[in-house]
Image (cartoon, rainbow, N blue to C red; front, side, top):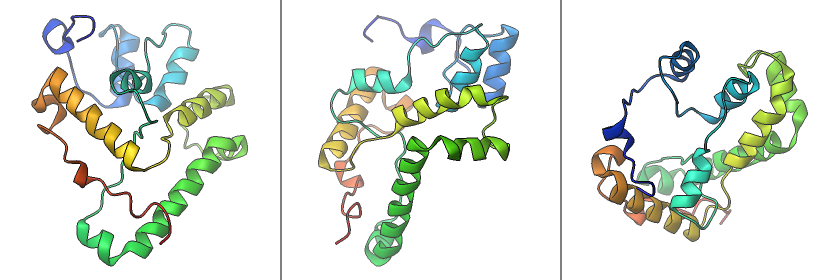
Length: 182
């Protein structure tokens, strides 16, 4: 919208799995791709590609404010009320693991040694770590919920509800009560 360009109208848009997107780019079948964060360092490291803009930078441009998360966990209302202790423990473990991954290079080396990082050599680990940290959301609170609601409204305004998947986002769909112990 900012540049008067609609990718869905003015270019050929395809949807594919991340490895296939990489292959299409490498074969020259497409000019550009939107790729998950963990695939970018490997592409850039070849020297044949460059990052034009990160999704997190685009989101911050569309909805300035709190550091919005790129991962939102979903639970039923019944689970929130009847299994709140289990959900609190799960969220605490998730936050702890995210903090550890964001700060400990050794964990990334272990994942590399186990062959689960999907990168050919260790030199890409610092780039992966930096991208991981950049994608970590800030606090989960009312300001975050307000930011996600505003982001969704702006996206619906720009690209329409068919692309976003909903005509609007009810802030009541989000819940911040499980973030801290009672």
